[in-house]
Image (cartoon, rainbow, N blue to C red):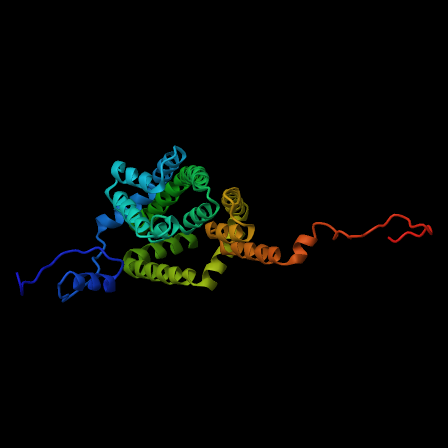
Length: 326
């Protein structure tokens, strides 16, 4: 019906592409805006990250069985239990059929497929060993998942102790001690100085708790914004290394070596593998040392330091006059 206003959704990469598609179909766009992400969509995107291991495992098995990539993706889109993951696989399949490479199609979904994952797929495409790379990625994701679960299981008990201990201290200071102060006042006599300081602190906390809460919240916001900056993040990581240096070094070294080994086995060059493996390191102090390693690997002198240069010589057999040219 001409002149009628139609509302709906259209699939496009951005608003400009959506406007062009609407004009090509004969519609006059009045207002085009990207839909807001609801809470359910954010939760589904997080759950799709959990489906990455399943996606990698199933696609690796299908490619190892001899199926072409588009056929394997089509099967995964049909059997996927997650609706969000099914839409992502269909989007990847559509991009491939339009002429994009598999790695470029994955790069359009950075919330699901991390940069390391995309770079390894790109290396597998270049070397023609995509099925091998997917198998290595499957092993890498399984080991990473096991490591995260182990760290979570180790940290959950001290976290519960800290939370319950902090709550107990707050209850003692705000509810229990004020009642004891009344008893001390009725008994009379002078109280020890530490007891007076503790009672004063308890009464102040009970009367001005909102100031303490506001100051804590403001300080947390300022601290969060500070550590998001490059300087603040580096100093915070340096402080964590001072407190738990041995644990952090072991965790970061294990994560880096596992990632670097996976990249090298997949055929990624050393310099590119070092650059990509650095992305999995959370501590900026340790990551900066990887930059120094990469810079040293680029210099020819770094390879020559492994041993003295070979002296190439040319020896001729003795001539008739008995001379030797060495």
